[in-house]
Length: 160
Image: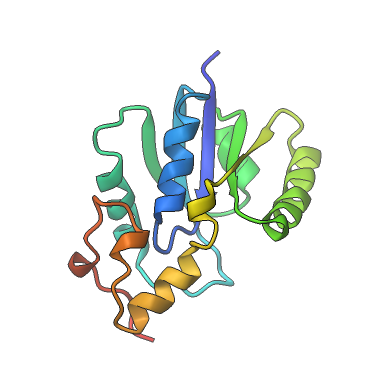
């Protein structure tokens, strides 16, 4: 049976930490679906289509990575796509506590789906999308925190 993992997130924007998790996870899975979840509680900086385009550029040569988006429960999306795994990256103990609670609820709702956690490399621990967005909003150069395939000058976020 094909091992398919969903890597869900808002990816607003996609960072080098996200990229590293996916590239490392390719040794574990046959296919990874990077799926942008619509979160009604979060106001996006980049439009959904822009985020999909950015991520697609990063993995344009990797046939085992697909970029998609969804609304609703992540476990329902996994079932719909035949994914038996949820992939998540962990930077800190706080990330672990947050992700653990979600994983346990997901396991109760969908016993056949396993959550798989990969620790970030130490250099990526301080990098998160919120910090990168703040740098961009303030006119700073965030290029060192996003994959090389993404040229932030090509993209405009929503105005606050």
